[in-house]
Length: 82
Image 1 (cartoon, rainbow, N blue to C red):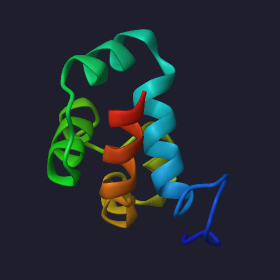
Image 2 (cartoon, rainbow, N blue to C red):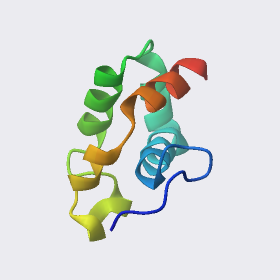
Image 3 (cartoon, rainbow, N blue to C red):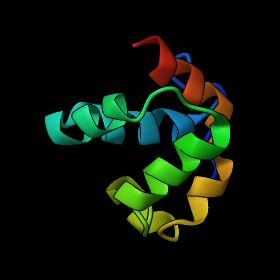
């Protein structure tokens, strides 16, 4: 189910949601921080390594399918700033 854009200051819900899952838990946040700097491709690769079936919130939306709607450039920029 596609959600209205933008969402909570992000491009869309999917982008916001992936960022939340990767940065919300201390272990995943530390892994993310240790892998800087990021490009869009690297951010996508790291997120898919952590959540190969998509983040848990995507389960009702086809698993990894919504990962294709994530703005990886925006994710990379945010992860490089922190």
